Image 1 (tube, rainbow, N blue to C red):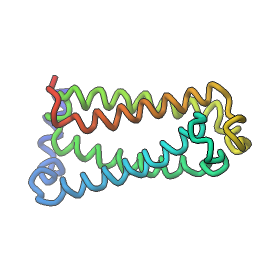
Image 2: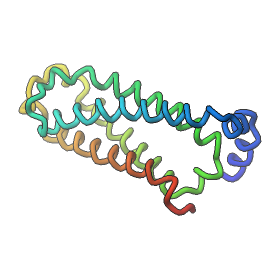
Image 3: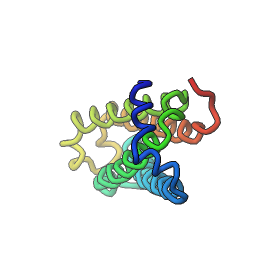
Image 4: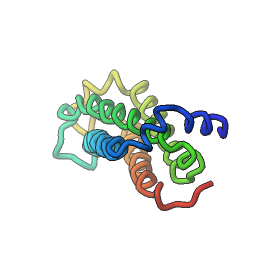
Length: 161
């Protein structure tokens, strides 16, 4: 990992990201916008599937995964640039490491959900149509992404290493 950090620090992109007066603030804005898309859609989707948002029919949330994917893509790109811009800070930061672990777990959870229930999703009309395991996966999704959000905010404040 140390070799990757050292190599990234020497790249022109890393130097530009740190030297530019506007690159980091623009990345912060993009990351916040991506997070808003991702979590805004995800909260409605998962709460509806979990049965906690009964006033929203399942049919109304079927297209939200596209919004979630778009938000995740923005965050993946901006987050990667954050890492490239200051790799020594992020590589040893416990908040960042746990955040990445939760992103991985959230991805596995989403993959499992879509693999098992993706084809059935268009046929669900109400929360009663959602299988119990799918409701549990929606709850796990909410909890892992809440953890990602909280750990992301803690990165500047938690100890490193």
